[in-house]
Image (cartoon, rainbow, N blue to C red):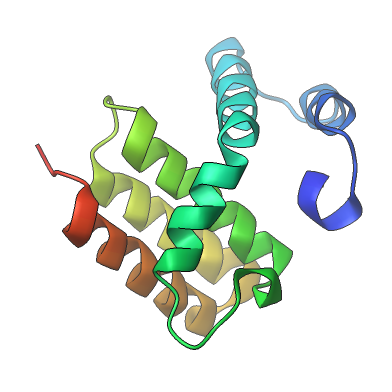
Length: 121
């Protein structure tokens, strides 16, 4: 909602939280991940852009950009989630919302970043 519709972070987050049936733990995670991704958006976009070949980050569908940012944020800043789990979840989200081609694209970029800079502890 934030990227595609140019909605503000607080309004978009409140809308989702008020209109979904999330458990308290999910509510907290959703809030922290949105705030985290938005606070690191420029850094995440730079890393993602640096790993694109013959493609511009701005040309990627908003849904796919959001999925990539979310997964990369988890990979870099959430030590409780193994990078391969973040990548797998991103692939599943891409399949669900954009199809198999997008899922392969997401996998390729995130795996390339993982191999170059993120440890799999």
